[in-house]
Length: 413
Ligand SMILES: Cc1ncc(COP(=O)(O)O)c(C=O)c1O
Image 1: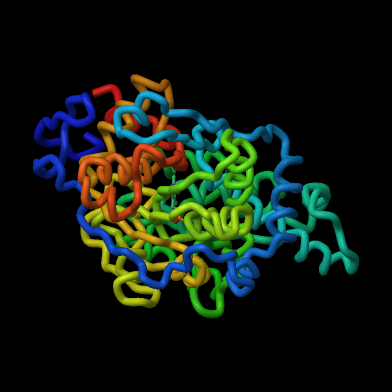
Image 2 (image 1 turned 135 degrees about the vertical axis):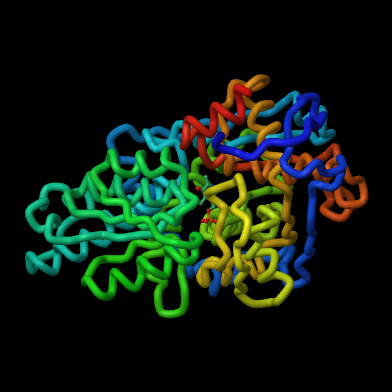
């Protein structure tokens, strides 16, 4: 059996199993309103400059030319919106993002290509265009890129390496599923298993990169390591840019609920939306698994914080105990509310999306939406977050069935 199962719970009209047997209405574990959030203001320069407009534009221009590129759909969840009592509910569906089935395809692979552009340019003694990188495979093959992953980011880096012709090593902690290892290996990367959790694998990858002269392409950042994670995050804004272009209302969304791992996703999306909508920006809400809530803890502590992961969450892509430093510089004043949720919400919501909307949503795709559904079951919290029948909500379904065996077990059971 791949995932834990226990009691049956009636949830959103779907009977399913949860791992703890919690009482209904208790799935929001924690809520922290961020008093430092800047409301009714344009995005300050010191934040927008973390991912300048030119870098977001460059990412979009480059990725739009990748073979197989197409904007992913923005889907209206009409029935669920009516059930929850909100005006609009839109789901950006990343399940068909290239062949990788997650938004992470936009980040790691783009950073590999950008970095190789510089390395090859230096080796050749003249600048090369970013689109020309794959024509210089004889230079690329002497480069080894390395990263740590709980699945999707490593797959993206491996894909980028395969496309550009360089070597790739991907570090995975012991709990990452065999299916996710396989998805990386078919792209030609070598997988190195590491004892411990995701944060241990990040440390090991960084140490080995230094010792071997490999290029570390991490999606999380720490003091002194910012450049590449910034490029990764610029890639993610392709998704938010598409979503804003697809947004069907004249009025912007009122709320965005998004899931948090190390914070790179939330940071890039919120920065991008804030730059576009200015003082009318939506209320930004981050949702994390209770057992890996480093962003929530950072908000409580007022600085990037670490949580020790002792129990792995079902939301594998969100299993990060350490906050990305550059992401935190955005999140500390962009995010209005931090929520943590229980794993029990995940399976039922995946099943609901599959059955009622024909949407393939993986374990880490539904957390933002799960945060919303739980808020709407608690009138006091809904009032605090200002969610009402007038609200226009945007959520990001960040992956499809990235591990088909786990997906089937959760959705088909
Ligand atoms: C599907 C999915 N959603 C969300 C995230 C969270 O992204 P971040 O770690 O940048 O916060 C991840 C991270 O791997 C992911 O794979």
